[in-house]
Image (cartoon, rainbow, N blue to C red; front, side, top):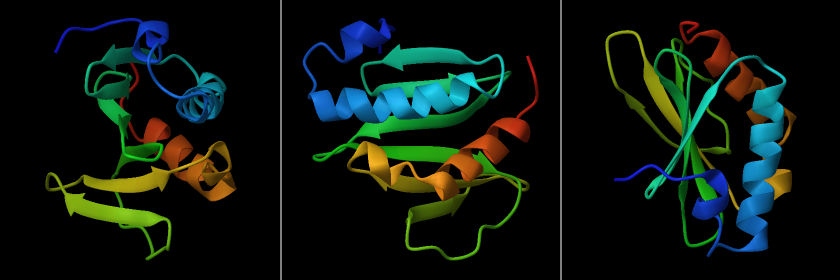
Length: 118
């Protein structure tokens, strides 16, 4: 999976997909230093390790993020899975930029904060 630029990743994707990415990336920029890697399968965000990613769906993206705690059941959670003794992965579908609402922003901020700094 060769890395590419974000612009190259979105070259053949819809304006809606780019708009979803843009609202997520803009929020992440407010949190601090982050590495963004555009791959053929999606985009990942890292500090020392990956704490979030988006992968394309038929409509929009599926946002994944890692937590060190259990989230309350929420209609936005499409899937969850324990990935280690202390980490749980959660997935949220983002079909439009407005799906990245204040609750999802809060979760992504927490995922960033709980990831070790670079």
